[in-house]
Image (cartoon, rainbow, N blue to C red; front, side, top):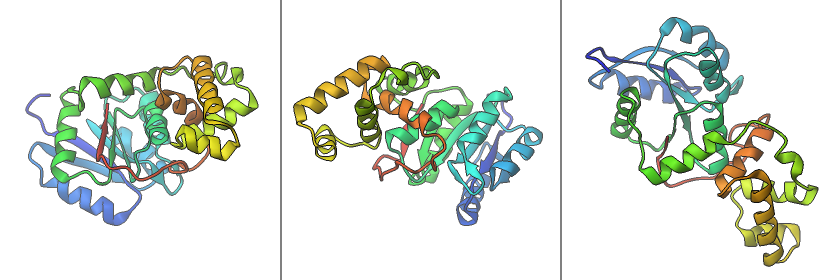
Length: 230
């Protein structure tokens, strides 16, 4: 980035949260708030005119999922860096956001200093995480957008994938499906082999995409970390 301030646009449904973000960003050196919206419709209308460098997008908007805004930005070729904001941070939510075009996922527990630092790093093209987490999110982003992988799954495997995407352990899946722990372990291995992925988060990405019509937080659960970075 040059010496020009970083232009930030906020897409946030809650008025109180939006006011807090506005206050925090307006007072941060090197940042300039260029616009805000509270719905998908407002965001898609105002973003092209605002021409921001970084866009913060609430994943739960009153007229649709915030991933629609992320997808709009990506499809229009906008140069803005895309940040998803969510009250949750489980893997299906992250996978859904990453596939829609998010370059970072921040939970609402993030501190003001951490939020500002994340915006500055993204605007400068610097990663927000260590190499191990980078590889994990990169793999999520590379999962192919084809149904052919899901078509390989049996009905039983699809049901298991749904539980896996909700963050269930193998033991919890076994209890839900009335199977032995060993059988579930074999099913998980089969699912991951058919989907051609190496970890559960990437498998959850397939399910998150297939369930894209559900509310963004449908599979969410509370999480400790404040930042899941890309």
